[in-house]
Length: 264
Image 1 (cartoon, one colour):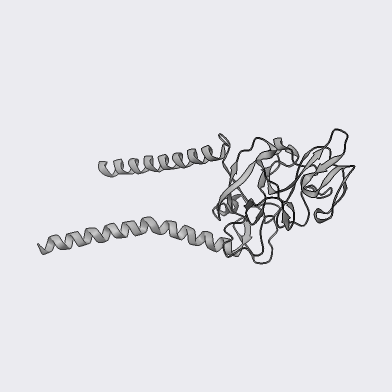
Image 2: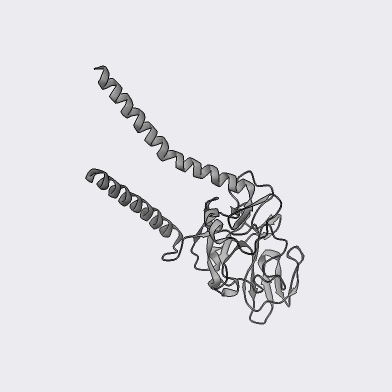
């Protein structure tokens, strides 16, 4: 009995140590300590229609995304014009970095995880410069592909947009983030993902404000595409099968050993 308790304590200590090592590695990579190094994606605003089954490599509901700390705007590569990117840096199905930020810098609001399209520089004379769209010292901003017309923001910052959204976050009546995203509003940029497992949290807390689309399924309090639920279920089964398989193997070895002992 005492031996079993010691083995259990040992296993618990090993498990805690492994979790600690993983968290330390994540914090070291992301630079987010003591804040969480990962966020759970709740909506389908970054989904891609042509993504393969399971949607690995794009940002989808239930994904756990690593958040890497940034210090200045140069740490973020913008996409630029659609179909004519200014960078070869590609993340999550398109060009440019995906950033996580507090809308209007309000930390009481749910962070947004969208792609950085361009940087708006509000000049000292009140004009605007956007290098990505070859706009220089303009009195207002008009970019047809972003549905911005005579846009006059109050500050410099990033124009952001969900890959699956028609309008940018800064669309005046969009209700997301009417001003360009300042660097100080940014939590970090997305780097890497653990697909599907964030659905477990969403099942409990839900993804409020997200409506089920065609092919989506509700489980618990969460809605997400059916293939994501299937992949989560298969992953959990695979994880559960590991200790069961090890126990079965140990039992087989023990029985085989006993059989050989009986023969001799």
